[in-house]
Each structure stands twice: as structure tokens, then as C-alpha cells.
Amino acid sequence: MTPNLYQQMFETIQSDDFGRTFWLDNGELCSAPTHTDGTTDWDSSDYVSEWSDLEGLNLDKLLTVHKQLLTQ
Image (cartoon, rainbow, N blue to C red):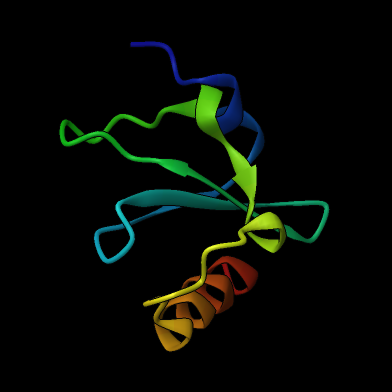
């Protein structure tokens, strides 16, 4: 299986807590939904800074993902 272009360009983290795959694009935290089979829906990617519904968001877990990406 050939890696997706996103996977070739960026280090990614799949988060079970969010059901999303995260990566950094020029310092911007990005994400896309992760399917139950572990693949990522790259066509539905977004910038976390554009998220508008933050109700129930566990900021501590999100910051942990961001920190892990920064230290990869």
C-alpha cells in the first residue's frame, strides 16, 4: 500500500481520544477524522484553530497531542 501524500509530507499522530489524525503544517495544528479501520479521511481535513464547537473538548488531551507533534 502506497502511503498517502499527507503521510509522506507530515509526521502524524492518531488519537483514539478524538478519533482524529493530527499533524503540523507550517506550525498549524491540523486534523482529519480517523476511520475505525485506522485510515484517515484526508478529504475532511481542517485546521484545529478553525474549530468552532469546543463544548466537551478536553484541552489537556489536545495540548498533549500538540506537544507530541512538536517533539517528534
